[in-house]
Length: 115
Image (tube, rainbow, N blue to C red; front, side):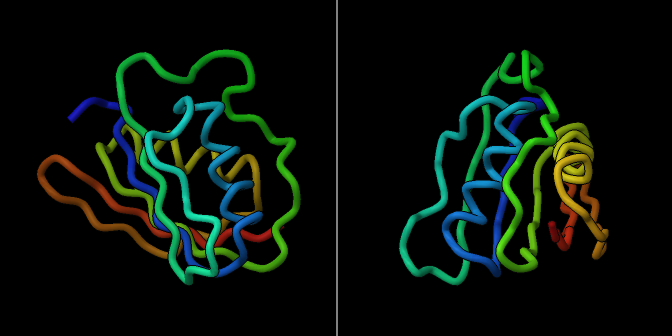
């Protein structure tokens, strides 16, 4: 697993909210390999991965659109990827840490995002 591999699970909000969260992460991780669906899903998933993505102009941008309602986001990946994702989302939205779990090679963190 590369240090930029990350899975993002979103619940709450609508497709526009999911796009806003993914857009905030693109500045840090580059474009996702998988984008959240635009359907009326209750849970949406995006995956980011690959070497050398992100870190360029716009990394950690804070000009995201407001969320229509609170969104619960779970980020899972390497400790470095989870830390970078959490930092990016905390700069882009009002974020409340809802807990974390750590394994040997992966971490998981849950955040509640609001505008």
